[in-house]
Length: 438
Ligand SMILES: NC(=O)c1ccc[n+]([C@@H]2O[C@H](COP(=O)([O-])OP(=O)(O)OC[C@H]3O[C@@H](n4cnc5c(N)ncnc54)[C@H](O)[C@@H]3O)[C@@H](O)[C@H]2O)c1
Image (cartoon, rainbow, N blue to C red):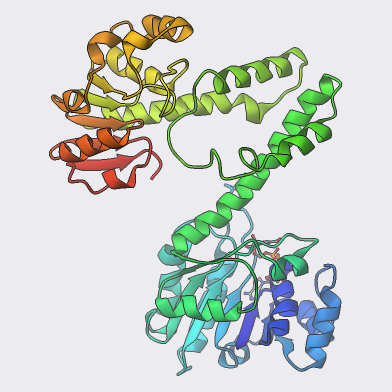
């Protein structure tokens, strides 16, 4: 494949070094003449392990060269990768001007190119940018629409500086968002031979995945640093604790607890978070990120309440009361907090939870519910159908198969507010359906 790469920084230079190894012919493009000269002299414009040797070998084999001439690059390639910088502006929104300039200049050349061309964005950009901002620029400058010998793709880059050549050959996955079918096929061919899953999705999702990866990495670093700082103040080695912590790949380093849904609760998580925050406070160790956990959880309950309250309907069937499905433990359940809020604001609620039987409640669980929702006996219904009888709004905290069947059967004319994400409730004939994070 013949490829042009716009932007010879960390991302672009690594692609220039590695794509020829996959059998492609590459032309690097940059407005910085020093970077262009360096590539043509067989040297890398960035420092990375192993990159100089690869660039030198590719230039010598005649499969890599660089230029500042956009026309030369576009007319002599079938695919253009864009990896120019998207630095933060004063308001922290990314500055897209370099990406837009490159797209415009590629588009202008495409006006005189008869063959098909694929433009692949590698720069990190906010969700929606490819379709809403860059597609119009490309189509206007090229004088043709995507689908008419033109593809526009967003393909995020996951490499890490310092190990980028190795990362190029072993990515965690290759994510491809395209605005037409041909774009997917071109990018899959570009990376043929690279291991790991190839994921086809929309541009918006691909853009979001890249953003969230970096936010998550930042969150993990902050977690480890805050946790380690508190532990150190009690004479512990945070590295030793985190080493053992990370060995748990079932619950800790895994997809567990990473599904958007409702707030956390129960007898352990809120208590242990409060306990750890107390340890930090007693040791005078500021941990602003972890200190925000409880406020964030409370804001999520507020979000659910606002969704229910919107629209003014006051009769609510609430499915689920225990802190998670399959248990009758209601201590610190966010659904109990939500039920209390609804009752306090004058909503008329009926509750169904297949695992909660008041007659069976004992000990702390009973004390908690007697204190928090004293009228529960009147509100808790023995069957899903009875909970649904008067309902205008169906709130799904969690629901067993029997309850979901009843919800589907009684959905007509009612609003569904889904806090859990049961796909079968999405299109079940309700007057409206809204998920809390989807
Ligand atoms: N650095 C990383 O590890 C990394 C990893 C993944 C994604 N990204 C994203 O990739 C993008 C590029 O990052 P980078 O670190 O390689 O940037 P960089 O600043 O190192 O390089 C950008 C290059 O683009 C060139 N350029 C600017 N305008 C141009 C134009 N009109 N035509 C041709 N070249 C032009 C610049 O001269 C510069 O050489 C950013 O959006 C970044 O967020 C970076």
